[in-house]
Image (cartoon, rainbow, N blue to C red; front, top):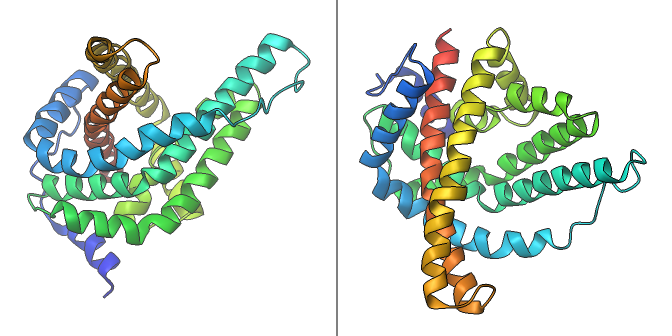
Length: 266
């Protein structure tokens, strides 16, 4: 039996200690926050170092992305909107690739903790490095499909985004690669689209408010105390606090992992 098969078998056989089945959005969100706080040190050990790099590099790379939807529709403002959407998705892809090791490791740590087990962050990071190549291939395929969907009047992109949203968990926890990870996610969502869509949109709004208005406000306030806006001290402090804020993505992972496991049982 391979190490990956052993991980999958352990995931399926071990009794979970956090099993919020059939709970509404707010109940599940509350349980996710509680579980996140209990495992904050392990998550922070993985996420913070990687996303300090992400927060420094990705904004710089985004400046080199051209307006890919220029003259696509012939309507200026619509082309600008599509170009910005595509730029956001490409930046998200770049961030996913660079932060792939952290996401894989965090998913592994959280999934093991839910089963009542414990994986050392260093071992989880090693697992992340080993699984990164296929993770990157699957991420590229996922984002290309979603980009194509958004180009066709946006709505298809939203639908594809919801159907394929569990690709990371399908790969990391079930050993599905590339196409099989995407189709596994689609199969889970099929018949549960409205339920999944409401939960995904809900957690996305919560994380957006948390990152933009809560963490963003704290980061901007503290950065303003050390320097003027756009100065090097200001940008440095703001970037560090933004990277620290990525730790709260653990809440999203816990929330989505719980929904993923619940859909599998259905």
